[in-house]
Image 1 (spheres, rainbow, N blue to C red):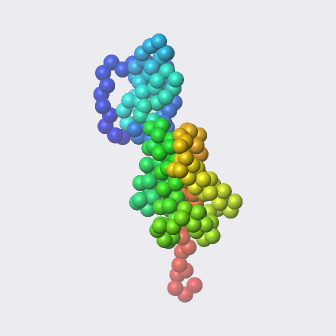
Image 2: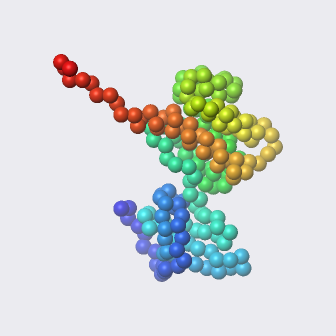
Image 3: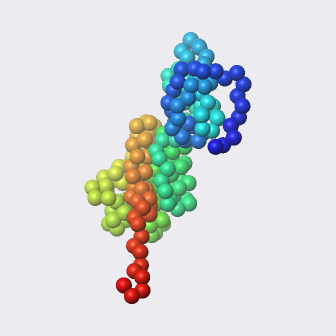
Length: 195
């Protein structure tokens, strides 16, 4: 277990379940501090796993924000870095940046699968679909990432939390389909000589 800081004068407060904005673990805590203001109660909870503080404002916003989505196994370095960047953007309430990063993530996935760089974005969508990197009936998700990404890129429009979280969900499933799930298939064993 990681070494935790020793916070002074902490006490038992109203229990809350949350995802820690520092370590990402799903936890419940009743240790921390509570303060009242004109807007309502403020809470500072200590994560029982890493010991770091998570601040909750009266309207429920959490700082630092917990990264949405789940870790995906077996990602290549740049794809993993960009996927985590998308998650961090959304955790920081930077939803337009998250949508733009999802669009860029789609390009990196496609090039990592062998597509040439510098193509039109629709060519990347076609590449993934035509080569079986998109699950059956999944071309719509990839095209939706492209479409929303284009909207964020070419229009004067701010993306909503729902927009960014939806695209993250589609991107996560695509990453699991391309990278993680194939690594879970048991590898066939070679028969012993003479069998």
